[in-house]
Image 1 (cartoon, helix red, strand yellow):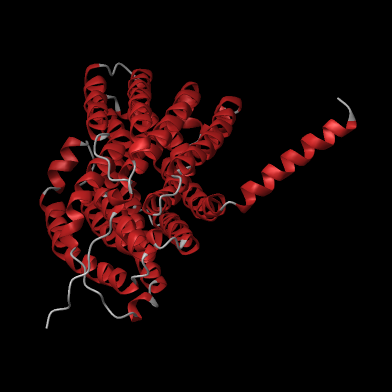
Image 2 (cartoon, rainbow, N blue to C red):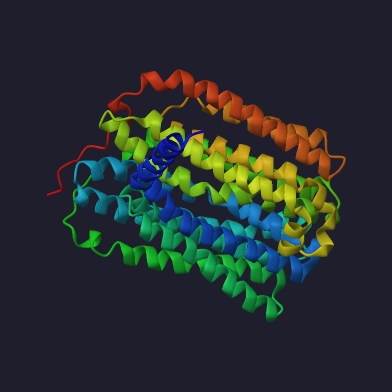
Length: 443
């Protein structure tokens, strides 16, 4: 190849690099990625500390409780999505007063269900202890308090995501996990064990909620504009289905493993699940940025398909790089995260990495469907959840069997979601993302 051709190729590559660096989507992803990476690293430090201090058996309890916490946070994720979607639409029209109303009204509406959850966690603690083979019911009560706290946290986070204030959201996401991990370190030294792991989760949520409210101080000075919150009900149902489905896919396998496998194997699988979710949480910022950007693009007759393809490319690239690391140094990854007691997990590090990438792409497409308020993805997601529970219940001879069950379900779902995306893309219209209408203030 002659020098002029080399120069031409170099200038094209440089031009593409500049184009990517100038992309608002890429910049927003980078900002939120930093917070997500901080949270992800902190989250794995949290699990590593618990695993090393408590061993496979004790960590099996922590992993199952965290899985229950993740399922309990479905309300958080649903509300975050609902508020982000409507906040994005209101932000497009410059209606800050309506956003203020969403923040205050949502906080008030959460008080009663959060209180009921605390009562239920006390009343049902012994039953949960028996099903999950826990040593004591106390951690279940702390778990209930943590879930109630994270419900409230959804309000400031949804507003931050919807208004595309990604630096503040990034700080909030990372800060929660830093506080959680720091508190866990202290409580493990004090000998609080499994209970300490749940108290640390609660403390992180409370700290993030306080920081999130502080970030809304300017919004709270705006005059209020009341909106019909009932108009959000239709999307709330869609968001609930999508959120619960994804949560189910990356948590219920741990709960079933704890029930069907031995205590040692359940602890090993709990560690593998956390390794799989490295890619999921590493790429989570991509879907968080995509969601309000798709709402904005559809409302303004932009190019949501282009946003989705770019986001899928970012997710795929990050996932493949991480999987390559899993393939090269699986032993190092297991030892750094969990110690030599988890050596039985080493052969499965690469397969669970592939599962993590599939789950990330599943989540990205589900977020896209929810942003445009498409409900026809729900039957496919529901089928995947049923198949996951059924396959593990019927096929659980060991850790490898559960890994194979999850992989088959995750990639079968991905195929169905891609087919739905191809059919949906030409049919997107602005009315699909219409915002709630304002109503007069009461006299």
